[in-house]
Image 1 (cartoon, rainbow, N blue to C red):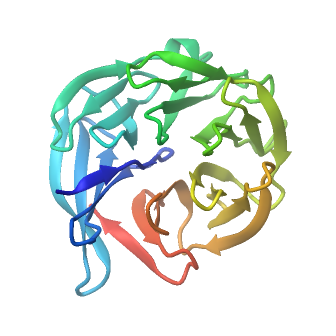
Image 2 (image 1 turned 90 degrees about the vertical axis):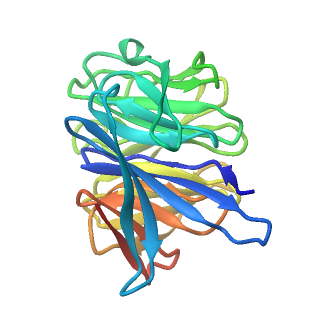
Length: 288
């Protein structure tokens, strides 16, 4: 029987976002389904499957209207269910067949003024991490939530005003991306597992960073660069991120997810989903 493993993907102002569910059969095969959420009225959950003829494309298999979610913008999974985060609102939980399981949490009132587009991600310990962007240049609070939805840590800094991505490394350190063309500019913030600030890092290699993801086994940090049309990879093995290389893309990525069990990289670019190979030689789009 297939056993799903953890992963997630987010997106910024995209028409749909993609989230991965993977399992291994007894024969060792790795079937993969991709779930996306289409922002609109109503919010719509979509399930994609990949076909290899006439090309490697991801096509829509199923669609479900999510009447309980108003303006769903992000997805994450804990192996058993799918979390859908609303624009400036709650995080709701669904099963893999689109059935509403209830509200998981709502921390938007604690995040800062005028909370906007969310970013959510899970870790291997069952925690969920959430940030909210916004239009006001004021400090914002991000959160770690336990499996019951309770807040177990908060992350904030006086200069962290435009968070656009969050993820945790295997040692519990949390990285939050601040994307800003003016003011303090583009920076990466690092916190320990208790929420204490550790350091921040400039990102001179990037034009407009839009999201991040961590490959836990390889201790690598991936940052989507929207206007740079690339994915930048940083080595985290020494703690501080060290730029390693970049993967050029034919489109502008706003969202990224690194599948933990394989080398597969997924994202959202120009309002559509994609999968890209680790060396950038293959780019497979989603058709919705």
